[in-house]
Amino acid sequence: MRRYLFFFGLMFVPALAQAQGSGVSSIRPLYEQFRGWLIASAEQMPEAKYSYQPTDEVRTFGQILGHVANAAYTFCSAALGEENPNSSNFEEVTAKADVVKGVQDAFAYCDKAYAMDNAKAAEEVTFFGMNGSRLWVLNFHAMHDAEHYGNLITYFRLNGMVPPSSQGGM
Image (cartoon, rainbow, N blue to C red; front, side, top):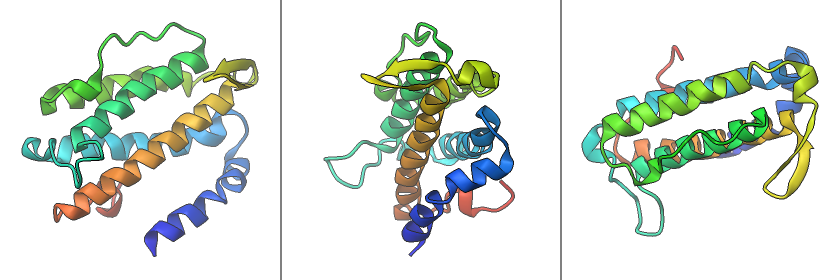
């Protein structure tokens, strides 16, 4: 049921964004919320569970976080119009401390993208062969974070743990 409520809630993201402002300020709160939950996920999962995967066909917990870090650099460098500064493949990193640092550093890099002014955010870019505004790339990134945080929620629950978004106070 929660899954349906989550996806139903995503239908109202444009209205929420409109109510909170325009341009980057309209999606920054979403980005900040998922950034916090993803960093907390990286920090809270015990290192022994970083190799957990429910089936052989899906990524491990650590690989999902590594993918999130890699993707953050890809999305945010495109939005900023910069070369991707990341030279690591965090999806291949296995030590928890290194994954946590990778996720934290990736989001620190993205913070400057989510601080760009509306004029720059309205500029058109090409991303993965599609044309859209820099704001569109940032929105795509926020939704990507939401998608993979949803994966991590399942991994937390399958391990008898409460995910950060259900702990309250975040």
